[in-house]
Image 1 (cartoon, helix red, strand yellow):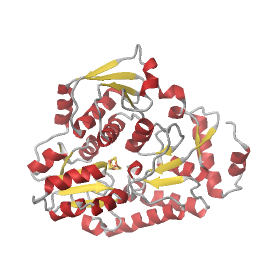
Image 2: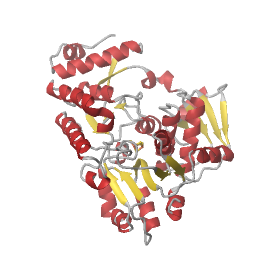
Image 3: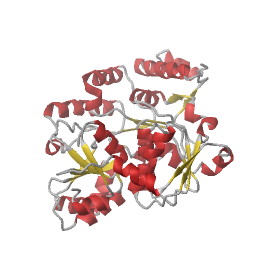
Image 4: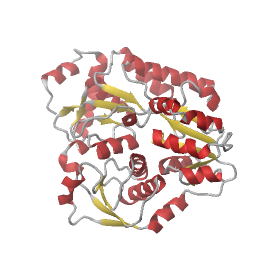
Length: 396
Ligand code: F3S
């Protein structure tokens, strides 16, 4: 691989032993994927933050990087942790877990990473520019930044995003190159999509059918920001899709139109969406309603606040969001309204990365196919519904 003088110096340890080690990792990865050079990246979003995934071994590796002088040189934000950093006791998180999680966040802070603990950093001001090279991890955030914002990243991992944050580089291959951003299949949506849940179902079935191919959607209508984050989260979960184009919706779609001739077409009808909803839905007795996968926007918190006003949701509703959105929702009175009805609004974490087994969860109802997928895989019973459906039925 061809390296610049600055990269050679970094590799020789002139910045820090940590930067040298992490650059070595990126070079090795680039060589596996046939990259000829590295490319400067503007921002990083780091996953693998929950102590549930990292454990002591992961934390030790992270601490070693910090001790070797690894420090972020570009803007770097963090994905959700395994608990609300302030309200963990109320969530029922074991003390030992909380201690481990605190040490993880402290180490990231020492490395100069912003402890945002959210999978929707783009809702709190981390918005890369169109066409910029970035290094983001977390399937839903990757899908959003590639597709809706039009920045360029591969589906990075925790270690590679840390390496990019510290070195300001990524290996130039995959979705960073024009030719790999072209569609691999056309998805003709004949169903009328009216809710975020339906966009989530569409994403889930598209990922299952296409695997990692880049879909070019037609007939998407006018999806809201919330629907686009749900669509990307679901297709990144069931298949591994990192980039999608939506005719009349996403910024690169127009330029991609010349590449869709002759591609395989997948037709999606109303009944396909309904079948998908039924697949992750079992009859439940007393589920916890979990919303905010990906982390809730201000609009979603407003919707929840309006729907629960005057209702008793005590012990039956948890909503997840980022600290930034939570602060705005608090100002607007949405958090107070949800909590007055007995619901909880947690920050920094989500239903998938929290230690839910240890917290005693058995049944959940949700509007996110990504959450439904993971909760089912964890052995929980799930039910899919829109926010309105779940809250008006109390989810039973
Ligand atoms: Fe975000 Fe957790 Fe869902 S990280 S996309 S809320 S699984």
